[in-house]
Length: 493
Ligand code: SF4
Ligand code: SF4
Image (cartoon, rainbow, N blue to C red):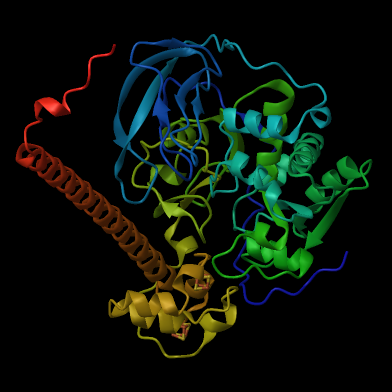
């Protein structure tokens, strides 16, 4: 199939061989599971259980907390032993309200919605509802609620891209899912296409995953609507807008969605989760993650109940090499992942991998001054000028950075990777985006406050006018002459 050129990008060392040959293993139930209420983009889920409650596997623990949110279900049967603030798997180290579940080892399913034997016979809205109920979010890392993306039918869509690029170094969980669950992934993709009203599905897989390409090609063979597209190995090919460009040649304008150019992108793991939810009424309670890095005794791909503590996973992989803590512990890949504040944080829906990296793997160097070599400009897949944006941000000129396009930065880290002066450019951009978002929030709050004050003043003015009118009417009534006997109504005959 014809592919289109995508500018920019880099070629880091992929280091996938450490885990790519390891089949997915099931993680045994741990002693404790910790489930933060916010493990997705959007509002935190709202508790529906209290401490002491016994729950069954798949039972609702917290419902969606708004239009953009996702519910959370029990990964196994057991007792809710606590609900408290715990450290989130985020570099900030901030705490989040978390449900602590002690498994009872019976792993007993609760009541689930009925299976849908033929998903292609039910209306698309039923699929969306089931996916929303199941708490499925994008398992490629963004953790955006999938039901919302399936509800984009009002846009003029023509292609569903199934994202099997997995361009981040080290990570191989999507590769293994495609090799081991190809039929399930294909069925999930067909269900999603049905929900979106689409007939064309393209499975995009980087050419460094030949076994996954073969497995998906075989599983897709009976369906004319599905094409498996081997795509070049080029980081960050897995980003939605770059995949869209490579497959369709369409550019997604800044600030727009790929759906605005007719394309919806879903991750292969998400497709498998959608199939399980629709066909069998199973909520999202586990996910496959890659455990890797030179600091870990054994690299593995593991299907893990959500809420499993990272410390338990490290033990399962034989602990740290030589018993020493790694130089850096990362959730996700080395390019876009986030440093973990501690081992006492759980796996959440968006966790694609845990990397224990040695100093040699990080190759961290002290940063120097910009030598204006332009390398960062050449690799930016979004056509930005990183050195210019960084210059503005260094001087707190966030509005200038915004005008230069910092909001369009997809935080791929290619510029930081290539910079010969080792300037942590992507950190500047993440910081600036955070500042701009918080300024937006403040602005919205101010506008809301202004509207409230204006509404109150308008209400007070209305009350004042009503009072004045009533007083004037009373005064007029008082000033009017008393009725004379002739004004009395005549008695009827
Ligand atoms: S790559 Fe680094 S040194 Fe070169 S222009 Fe960009 S910021 Fe400056
Ligand atoms: S500016 Fe943003 S999008 Fe461009 S290379 Fe750097 S991190 Fe990637």
